[in-house]
Image (tube, rainbow, N blue to C red; front, side, top):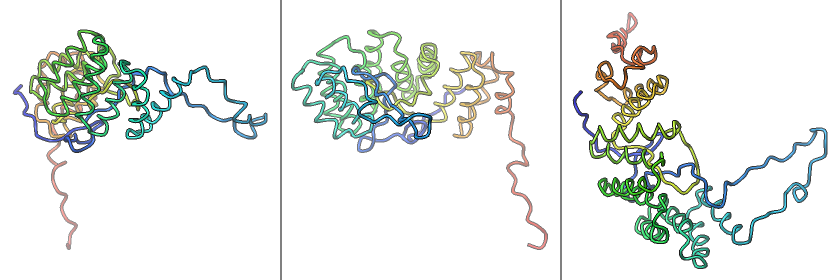
Length: 296
């Protein structure tokens, strides 16, 4: 198949256009939990359930967190609510007490990154790495920042550093694939996406709202991106997801679908009815305008 060309369009998932530097960053938080733990949700007992409603003060278990942990939890909640500007001073206060806490420094970098304050974000990601040179999350996030600046070679370099430390980091492989795709390095992109799926079959489906790892939320050329996702799922034998992304690639105007018939990566799913339906040429009558009723 001929190599597809990347269009200069913008990005985001699932799948809104990528933002340039003056807009919302083209990354989102993966589902990696914050170091202070997930924010638990509780449901109050409904009246009429056969017992009296428990007063809030009685239903709450005593907190075992320290005041310091409570402060970090409050900052994490602000992040989960996307109140990034409010989270910044909360993390800064903690960092004044713990200036070499890599996790806090990384979180503050994310708070700035989500506000598209990339210089400040890079400063705190860098401080996190200097505080802990084995902290792969901050290296991944540096890669995401370079990707947002369209410095794809530098992004690849940071992702590879993260993977040297954490070779089973599926999000970093996913991000690496997108950076390769932006450079039109299609074989490398496919290999990275394939490895990401091997490590985490749900890596392209996550919808987490807060964590410490950033992941890309799309690519410039969505049609090509969807095709390579379909190819990655096909190589894993997942015909359903393959057909889903082939359909999305087709709907984006991707013109290389004929390669599915001969590409070995699609061999295991080629006979799937869903895949075959997408590969069938459109009926000529489907594209014709129906004749006007007589007399009009």
